[in-house]
Image (cartoon, rainbow, N blue to C red; front, side, top):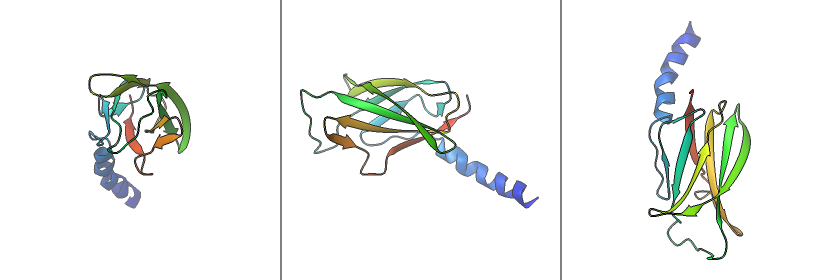
Length: 121
């Protein structure tokens, strides 16, 4: 019985994780993210971020299931609002995280990552 009560108390916390989340340099849509869904990323270089005009920016998505990541990457294309890419979230993902690489430079949100909860599709 106490496990049922604990599970019911955690439900609002889990729903809070799935709410719309925007970072200063990254916007993901649509949100909340669902399994099997195609998502669009719009990335802007961090303030003071350096860009190497000859080096492409790559978006790396880590899709997590039971804490184990599976990675995929795509080159980003310049757009009106920033650099853009799209990914399809795996059908069994619990969460996704992103990082961005340009040449030797990585943006991992100051080591905090860009994390999003994923809902069952």
